[in-house]
Structure formats: structure tokens, C-alpha cells
Length: 210
Image 1 (cartoon, rainbow, N blue to C red):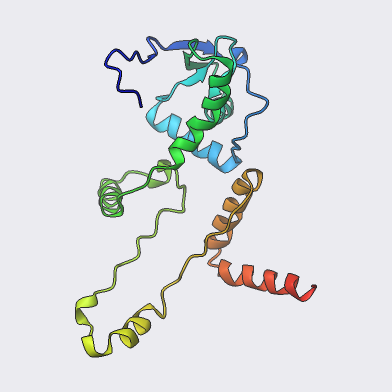
Image 2: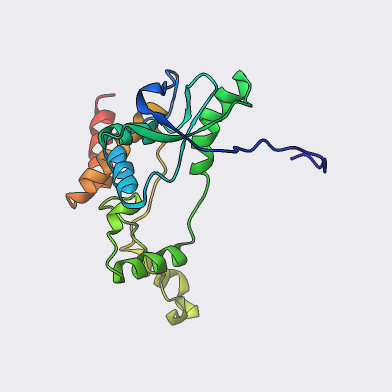
């Protein structure tokens, strides 16, 4: 970031309402949107309003908001709010299409505060499925109470406490496969299936072919 005190930051000065047919999706948009996610976005728009305008360039091309456009079409909206980013160069526009999506993925949650907020909203009768997770709300694992451990037998007791705790393994997916993998995991979890063992069985079967 520049230390120049005279640094000028471009800022959007107005929001416009455009007819949906005026917007031009970006053909090289690498971000995918599942039907489930589009449904979540549509439900959010119904509940909260269209609070996040679609970003477009000076040629009416979408820079950010392909999912919101798809949701608007599902809701049969005729107009959507847009902000025109007419200050971007062609290179900046292409880069921002990626950056806008990726920057949102690099944030995290304060689990304790999130758990408290979800609980409060639930007590108020708010439909938590509208928050973006659908039916698959976060599962906050309880932290073990280490104060009960005997210092002389610490390792054995820790192993006993961790015996029933599920552990996660990071698995990488290509961008075009990520949404599908996420949907499949959510589906099988909703069926109370042990996804880990399903994956183990598949990997063992493939290994046996070698």
C-alpha cells in the first residue's frame, strides 16, 4: 500500500437501476455458482432486499455479481441495482473479477461470537437457513476440559479424550470441481453418512487396481 498522503482512491458515486437484459455476463468468469447457492442468494434478496449492487464496466459487462444476476432472474426481477466501474483498465477489470471472489474467501469467523449471534437469532425466531448455509449450519465442537487431566498420565488421557473426535484432512479440488464436491459432501452429510469412510473405500478400490 502506498504511503503517499495524496493517494486518490476511486469511489462509486451512485447506484443505477438497469434492466436485466442490459447486463452482459463475462464469458471467462472462472467463478461457478451452483443451483443451491443461487437459491440461497435469491432467498437472501427476498428477506433483506437487493443490498449488494452488481458491478459492471463501461461496456455493460458484469465485473462482479453473476450469482446475484442469476438469482434476480430466478425471482423474475426486471431491474437490478448496478454500480459502474468506469475507472478500470482492461487488465484491472479482468484481475478484479478474480480478486473480488477470492478476497471474500480469505476472511474467517470468530466461532464464539458467531455461535452467540446464531443462537440469539434463533431465539428471536429468525430463519437461520437464510444466512447462506442453508440447512447445513456450522457445527461448533465443544473444547475439551483439560483441567481434569492428571499431569502424570497426560498423553494417555489426551489420547482417550481425542478418541471419538473426528479429524479433517485437507483435500484440494480444481476450481471447476469445487462446487460439485461441496454439494456432494453436504448431501451425504444430510443423509448422516460417514463421508470419510466413503472416500476411504473409494481410494482403496482405486489403489487395488494399480
